[in-house]
Image 1 (tube, rainbow, N blue to C red):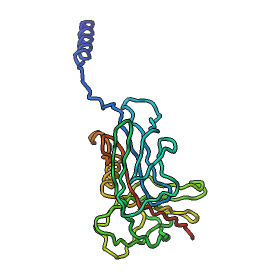
Image 2 (image 1 turned 45 degrees about the vertical axis):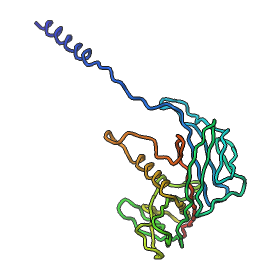
Image 3 (image 1 turned 90 degrees about the horizontal axis):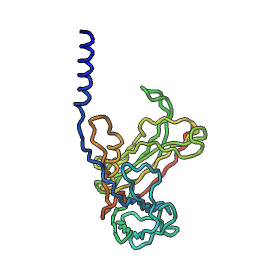
Image 4 (image 1 turned 30 degrees about the vertical axis):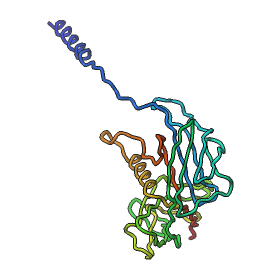
Length: 271
């Protein structure tokens, strides 16, 4: 009787695994290569560029990004020539101008891709200050950093802000920007009224130097960075599956073309 039970149990165990087989069709991502355009026009001299690459397939295990070195690039009638690594630049001394709409045209293998971005002016930053604050909660004691600003631009204008620090011990003299992107607009700020913004969760020590980088953006570029932040913050089994970020490149390419008015500030922390 014991042997019979063992045989019956073995048969049931085998049937359990053989009867659960099912063919599942998976809708695999499209492996079609697409042109990828990464471009910026800025008010910092010689920092404007357009980088052209190709996307790789979902299951492509190669680490190398395919570079496009034979495209024809035009921005408002100015030629951007290949300078290496898929990066195209204008002649030395090129600088963007606020209030200008920049129109990009990329031609590659007989196909033309276009985009445009408005170089909006940044708001006025008057002063960057630091002041000592005691420990509070999980934030250690140290020097907080804040900026004083006035925004007299028309509503609504957008800003993409990053900050960090540098010192000799941790960063070895190199700029160290935190990964956080702060995106905000001026819809709720009072016109021509000064205000103060303290950098969140930042505490520095004497001999550190705070780094603040402001970039004005237009609405389309702001929407791109919002989507990028949403993707970075998503996770878990019930989150939305990853998808391509929104693009302002016309013609079937991926990527972003953006115009920025850039303002940088270094604020040494002095005890």
